[in-house]
Image 1 (cartoon, rainbow over the protein chains, first blue to last red):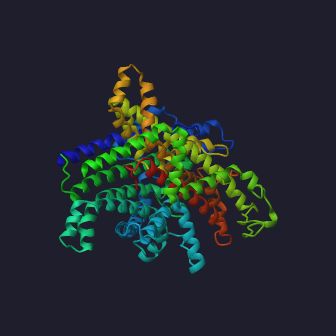
Image 2: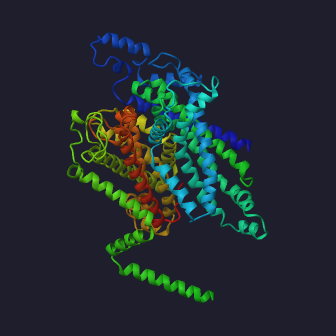
Image 3: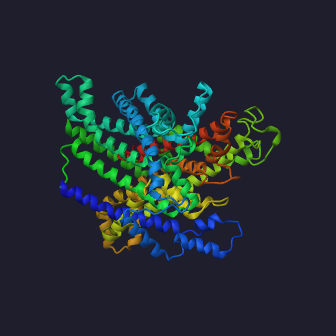
Length: 315
Length: 310
């Protein structure tokens, strides 16, 4: 087991280096860096522009820039934002809690809906309940989450005369104000998320319910709820856990559009801003962060398997 | 009992085989669709939605009551009425006409991105499965790297790299194509791996066929079902991505009518005064994606019942 864990951790390094190289190259393929963008249309003399480039280190050959960046990374130094001049790590750190909190609330919401509804749909297969739940979930896959967000805001304005406040309150200051602000965005992302997990729960549970040991459990006279929850659901949980965790990993980056709708200053908004400003160090750090979250969550999922299914052994 | 069962079975099999060989490709095609429509009402409903959208896009300039870019200052933000079915926006442009022309953008981006993305994924998947070894390893690692981002993040990165602008619709298409490739190549590779093991591939190799011929004449047709399924599945996704990118201001630009773009500007700004501006394009996006998803799901069930995705 220990060898497996160490091996997996070591394997993460090439993937993440690949991500780093790819973002570095892709971002620099295009003409027009931050300096060109800042002075676009104005008549600033060329030597001022050159001096500014030199200041930011953009005049060096590409491979030196890359080596510099990699050495910094090895020291866990992510550099400074070219746009604001603040350390990238601070820029990210101030926005991470918001996105993380939003992702956690959305996940809780999604799981709270997906598991029971998925189970009901599977147990009552081909009844009106199953159809209603399936239509609800197909709808979640079709509607863009940002549009659901807009509709939720429209709904609360017209029916309750209430709109989410524009200024953000951290949870440490006023938990109720904070939650009332995050509930709509969390629901709008969580809906799609729960639709995906619900479909997975339904289809795996349907498969497991046809297994012999479920028939045995029924034959020995167990109550149906016990059969479904203890015998079937436990065994159907593995793929469901995978979907839920992978969606969670994607969620932090996937909040991009929703944060825009609700005017929340999170990681997603930071990424869009960084892209429009061509703020290389910030983009690289963010992309690397999102990819690392994904790779690490993937790893954790594999470890969770061992606890959910004792038959799985990694050696 | 069992003997009779096997006899019956082989009789049914023989019948099916005869039916297959006596039919022409055209007959088989017609039969497939007839069965699809009668046995899968949900899929047929999806197909109707898809066809309606394609018709709306093709005939946009015939059906649209107004020019989608015509500005009219006398009816700014007019609510839905017989003259303007879905009202007008803050420039007095007819929302219904803009929706029809928006279908063009959505379908253009959706079809091109998913066809190009799935085809590149198909090629990479087959090449990896056929050559194996180091070639496969390199392709796989590259795909892994691409897979470790959410769709929208890669799309944003590609748009950032290629640039945005008024006539940069090709860049938007490229941005949506890139994240599709690894997802398709993975599925195609796993189906192709089992095909490569087949004796007839060995036989073609023995008669001296070249790698290109084996890969694209013999392997490709046998992984066509997953390819087609992925293509319909990603059409809906591509439409959704285009809307998201345009909504972020990283996609299609004015004056090109796009559903995501309609939600971005006026849709948000005049939410209280003119809610139809936000409702109509969202309903259009949802119906389009809903149609493609329903159709794709049923097509998957009809073509390959073993494939299952969440």
